Image (cartoon, rainbow, N blue to C red; front, side):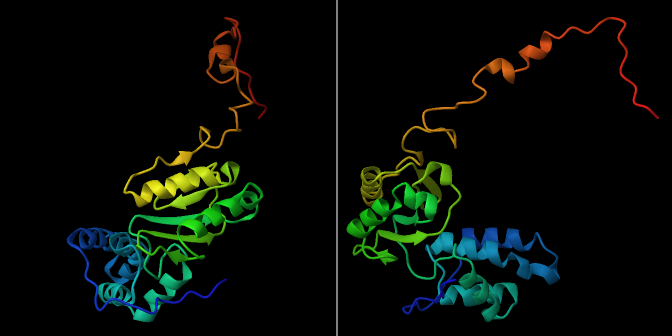
Length: 222
């Protein structure tokens, strides 16, 4: 596991927005008063949604809100890779899967696109709009290669399609997530190959079964 540290440059302070605090209080209320520290993960996530990343002042604010040592919140934030510990792009956080299935299907080309358009690995673009990093398996191996961008998966990508997606995000657009070859969910490329006859699963075959008038249910032996 790689070492995860807080960014060298930190903001002077952090404040919960009204919306974030309202949601944080909702999460805290889900637990007994003496167990409110259990809300640390969802509140870290709320802070990240507000700021784009988790700063040191934010960690201190969460610790104060939950009545727990700051180091405990820091331990959680540095353990889970879903929490960004340095500023990310204001328009898009691009996470390219580099695990074996994606790499065999062309993830290397996607990574090169990110390097060309954004910068070196785990880099923030010069204009601050884009950030990218290589991550481990995101669980969409059937639709490799793929990338998670902000809150959504973009699948069955090529260098060309990812390049256009990045350009669209940089321009303030909202590219459509999902498969870029028209695949539905995780079906085989080209469409489903099994259960292609609806009568196998729509119940129509069951309607043709005749039950004899005098037939009795089978009794199980005592």
